[in-house]
Length: 521
Image (tube, rainbow, N blue to C red; front, side, top):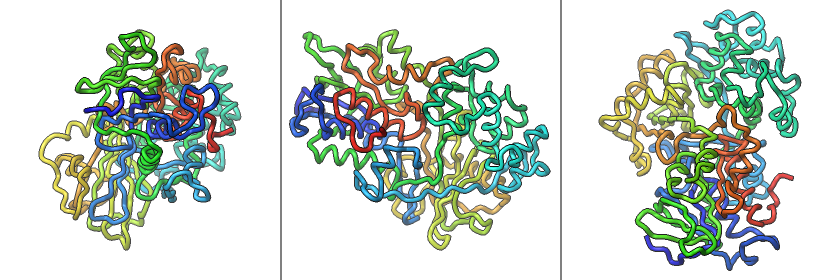
């Protein structure tokens, strides 16, 4: 690769939502008097580097072949009103970017746990549940404890309220204080795993019920309890939204706006190292695969843990013992999604149109996207995590499943699932839905986010980590070095695009840009 200029005001590495936002803001934002950036945006030189052939990072939206208007969201899917920046950027009354939001349908349908097939109503009926919970726990899931809450989420809220009375009404200031002061069983909350905490406040049968009904393990896994509790209890408030033409439209439109403003975008350009210039000049030297180099006054790494670790050896700050330690404060959570297309919505006769079903089988969750008149449709056949992901990894090899639906996108074909994966997914779907005649899919594609350079679909804070202290430190790990890090991995909104946007904006304000109108007061 050749670079037209070898010196930039800012180099941003990573074309996901955090990186595209940082690059766009660096190129167009209003600079304050203390900013190292030129006051006139037109005079700035900003370079955005993306190692892959697409913009989006862990947002990946692929049109479903043969199913007009349906989008397979292989990464993030939606946002809520709690996501202040995302909501402001996509506000229908005054959108900042040319994207259009649309409601994202949420509905609970079926559960298949411990060999029992249950409806949504069955899932809160003590007489039909195959779990030996206590009478009090059954009362919690039926709404006897709190009439506004039922099911598995109510059990987690009940456990939290026992230790932190009133926490269901907490906002960010109250949770910040709780993270700092609350102890349980003689230990600070951050020194307990979430799984530890839950099992110390409910029976193992109740915990298994929560895990199985969600169809996921990461939600109740053993990550930092002080961070897990507010994350779980505030995990989005309906209504939910996504974007027309795909959730990755946000980073794609930010990249377009960045280029229109004069920014330099280079695709399929991997960074291998970040070092101090040998001649003692200020700034940082960015080395690319192939040996090309560029000098930047400021470098912003919009990258998750695994990607940072891949460039850390020999790099400034990242390759030091202190840098290696702070990078390891989070853990990537392995998640895989498998999408299937069908000639018709075979689930419609069961009364299912939208939403999800879940199981304790490796399938995890499935989500329904029904086509017009129940015609060609899309199914997220498996949304699985952690141990279940390793199950599907054992079926990844072998011949690819052929897509017979018309006009499959190239990326869909690149991510084609194996025949073995599809065969097993259809078998488990049959058990979940009580059907033995599910038709053959017309196409199949998948994404395993545990792969490099992602290292997980999202990240969680490790047990023992003081996240409120680490999060601001990670924005600029060494105050003497103009190296910054953003993204949801090291944010208080892990797993949400909002976390990436918020940390990117905080980095921009450290570079002296004035807060935009959409920045929360």
